[in-house]
Amino acid sequence: MIIDIEKIKKSANIIGSSDKMDEMIFMVGQVANTDISVLVTGASGAGKEMVAKAIHKNSKRKHEKLITVNCAAIPSGIIESELFGHKKGAFTGANESRKGYFEAADKGTIFLDEIGELPLEIQAKLLRVIEQGEFIRVGDTKSEKVDTRIIAATNRDLSKEVMSNNFRKDLYFRLKTVCIDVPSLNEHTDDIPELVDRFGLEFTAKNDIAYKGFERDSIEIMKNYAWPGNVRELKNVVESLLVMNRGERITVDIVQKKLSMETFNANTNLPVHVDVESDKVERELILKQLLFLRQDINEIKQMISTKSMTAEEASAPSNPALFLPSPQSEISSNPHEGRESVEDAAIYALNEDTIGEISLEEIEHEMIKRCLEKFKGNRRKTAEVLNISERTLYRKIKEYEI
Ligand SMILES: Nc1ncnc2c1ncn2[C@@H]1O[C@H](COP(=O)(O)OP(=O)(O)O)[C@@H](O)[C@H]1O
Ligand SMILES: [Mg+2]
Image 1 (cartoon, rainbow, N blue to C red):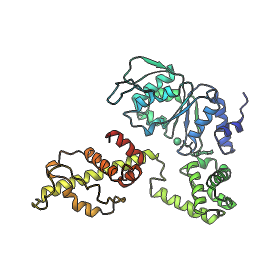
Image 2: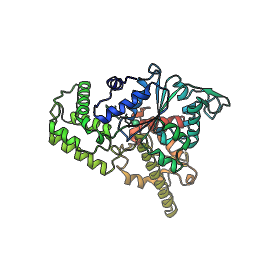
Image 3: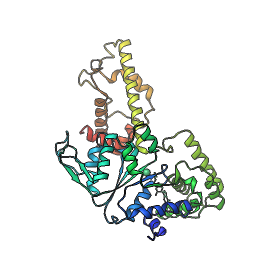
Image 4: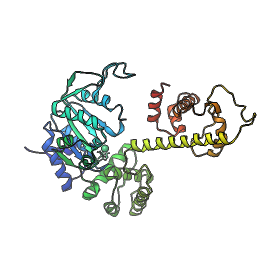
């Protein structure tokens, strides 16, 4: 079998010609044209998704679909129906039957990213698809046939996950028959000059910025940096340097400053730079906000039990039970701004009678509804003011049927 490494690289825009990269691409070439399942391992940002694309593009399924599923981003409660689809009436809200990702990828390839995050019971169902090409839609009794090639990826050590019973042993052995390990950037620093140049050229051409390149020694400095975020981090660094220094040649000094900022940010654990997928960061932010809310409610409860309200203080309307700030009042886009006055006013925010009766969800629902009204349905503004992402807002609008 003749393997054309350059052609494979081109098919998925892969840059780099170090021995490490060429060995990896050679493996891609060896397995691409078979239907065998492949496990792609490696650190976040190293290029696992890119490898999955290269496998698909060099397989006989290349004219069919490649469906990418990020298992970490789908809530565990709906992942089964997302993957395998559901029958009409399978659960509340399932008004129509729906195809899952596996059916959508029939004849093509499915890329299951972050497979280590897949709940155990779904792992069993995945094994069945791999071994028998069969699955059952949620709410159905008969099984369906599907012809989908599976590529999975993880940045976890799955053998450890097996030992701690988080990952099924049978699925692990089935997947790891063919395993392609994507090297971290610090294992192929020889590729850095080529990567920097290509990222620089592509970015400046797309954004109409002059490109005067990088000083040779500035690239040497990059070779000595650890790159915890791998190629993804390198790409971000190159792009931000070019934006910040519009049209100028990038010097040693500029790079040094930027990389010491990167180190600083990594050490202070800023969510943008840590090695966590954005969805996880988002979940953590939501959790934090919920904890704040709970704290606030506890404080309100305490205030109410210790402070007897005078008739004047309690002159707030008794109906509706819940009277949050009116949509006309200014809401600060910075959640910490004006916190004191919010706490002062907290006692007025909820009617005493309703304490213990209103759930956080109802408060959240009300807040979202009112903000949307205030901003005339503008979701971007609403999300900004509530300090949540637009995606989260979109989900909540659906969830609360606003
Ligand atoms: N060898 C490479 N050549 C070109 N781009 C790369 C390379 N490795 C990674 N990238 C780029 O870096 C980013 C992260 O790659 P990705 O495949 O999403 O990583 P992972 O899935 O391992 O987190 C993407 O923008 C990808 O295009
Ligand atoms: Mg990825």
